[in-house]
Amino acid sequence: MVKNARPAKPGYRCAECGHELAKWFGRCPECQAWGTIEERAAARPGLARVAAGAPSSPARRISEVDVETTRAQPTGVGELDRVLGGGIVPGAVVLMAGEPGVGKSTLLLEVAHRWAEQGSSPVLYVTGEESAGQVRLRAERTGNLHQEIFLAAESDLSAVLGHVEAVKPGLMIVDSVQTVQSTSDTGTVGGVTQVRAVAAALIALAKEHSLPVVLVGHVTKDGSIAGPRVLEHLVDVVLQFEGDRHSTLRLLRGVKNRYGPADEVGCFELRDDGIEGVPDPSGLFLNRKDVGVPGTAVTVAMEGKRPLLAEVQALVAKSHLPSPRRAVSDLDSGRVAMIQAVLERRGKVKLSEQDVFTAAVGGMRITEPAADLAVALAVASAAREVALPADVVVLGEVGLAGEMRRVTGVGRRLAEAARLGFTRALVPPDAGPLPEGIRTLVVPDLGAALQVLYDVAQ
Image 1 (cartoon, helix red, strand yellow):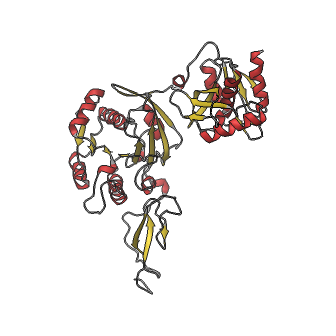
Image 2 (cartoon, rainbow, N blue to C red):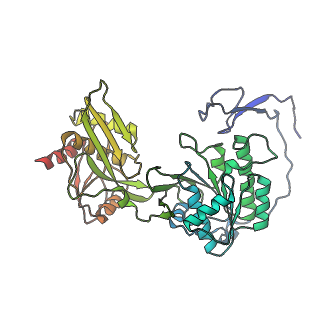
Image 3 (cartoon, rainbow, N blue to C red):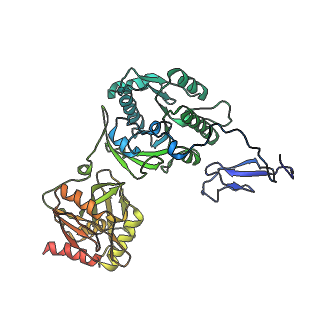
């Protein structure tokens, strides 16, 4: 019963983040998205009293809840299980997003094949973008044919639910959620209303039948997941599958995980005959040489809990333009610009009339501050034509005053560098316990690091 009922006034809500507004705006003040404000009927004012209803199941003591039915089951793909936290939990809904052609469907066919090989239950693969014949050809090319994989080329939600009742799968893959349509809801296929309705129905199905569901999601031009942001909040796990189109390396990042760590990264190599996990990817990002090359520096980046050695390269050339060029590839352009300014002001490295190109090679993107010193030494090395020794690895964050700041996990990073043959390291002060097998030189500021570089030339 509702007291003090008055005529409802129209309200507005953002389709992306759900923020409610009293009037229409072109841009949502909460999530800054354009054109997402929709009109809706506002709730009637007053206090609503809701009568108590019968619970669906009695409340139990937390110690009496059976956890064996919610244990993670390995998918058979080791790198994916690493990111998921050991496997996929019954009833969990996983959203995997990535650019077109990055290898999402290839990876999920591999998952379906490994799951079916375990023999516990069949797999239902719902494809809304391709025909069943196209998926069969890909499975044949990658060696992922199995009798317990069932294909359904459907785009109607009710038909998908019917396939679930008929097949009774142990794992369902929907490729992709933007192509499935609910006839009971309005809106175009792939629109905000449709995606929200389809995702809600599939999530309810997963929870009711303890059925793990993997949803493939499209991404927008800026790399974010398409559709309403509320979709990311509804699902249990959000994975981002990324990689350079011109490289075979693929990274699977955990963005959200209710059942395990959300900062793990899995590495894969995409081949003509399928996709394969890379349990030891550090060597993929290096081009080892016996002697150092001017303009290169090696650092150790942390992807989740995994240390990965990466090479930073720089090229400095005299500019013939009024405004010298500054090009950055696979590095944080803002941090690179700051480091170049610190180099010129604190390190006396003249770059104002030089074109400067910096890049992280091997297909890896580095954004953490621990690579600041590697960027600084690579640029200074290129400007002075002086090469760092090939057995030196550098770590450290550079401040605006030129001071070196400590970074996390120095011991783990250096242990990985020592395992791959590096014998010397430049580290910031207060680095903590350091591993054996590698000699360390503490550099308190950028000037001390540059002096080490200049001493090599003498």
